[in-house]
Length: 387
Image (cartoon, rainbow, N blue to C red; front, side, top):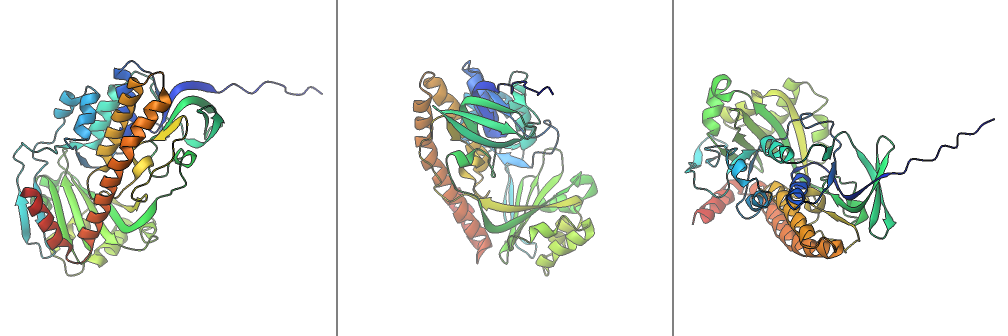
């Protein structure tokens, strides 16, 4: 009998490997490319158009915009800005407008479609940088700062620098930290009203041209007008950790009734934002890592974005910090091309305090908006910002 003695293939080796083609991983790869440094990104999705990328993002002057400048993409980013997107409306549960601000076009947080921003970054990278359909299942240290990463198809690769940009449930985070995200007590239910001006004119008028907030009774409806004319909504509820899991098994009408049951007595125009939703309602339980999450320096590996500092969305910092993390890490590597550990130490020294401050603000805003007198406290916060 002849035994199969074929040797196991040697894993592919990459000097720099990024796990996750989110905004942070793409920003890192782009800034490295600008500096003439090659990197590869392993992404579990089969392609860029497999799923929609979520709603609008306000890109902050001191973080997200700085990252796009470092990436050499700022001017192209400005062409994507949603004109009028910085307008704001705040209503109470009776449908009374409590605050209305128009977009004067001179704000420091212009709005852009997340999918268009991701495409901008993807299109700026050399062909083949992103390895689509590559689901990471685990990683282990090999010594000397090298790591081996295994994929769902049974293959593996090794790398001299491993960057985890793979989001909330990162497969790379366990290499440096035992922390896991915890449920915040708030769940979103995501929905859309398509072609709003034509198909949902009353809802379009209610939401306005930019951001929309309606809070009361420790719950709320948050919305934004998208660049394609749709309304993207997040219904926010204080619920137990398992409530959201009950929605996917319901038909659309039953799911809407389950959500609307939390808004008895609210103005009918507000309830219509939920009742008239087009398509399925998508539950989004909100999780966060501990405020101040950090780790000891581990040779050859680091994290960025949600993998490093997952937080609730109530300071608008998640995407901005992911972009900034990627750009700052890229610049640190370029400044220390022959001393990766020095680059990682410099990056993390700045990463930890800035992410802690943003996470603390996000947690405080969650309590502000969904605690007692949430609407009045939100209005007071807007007033203080205006001053």
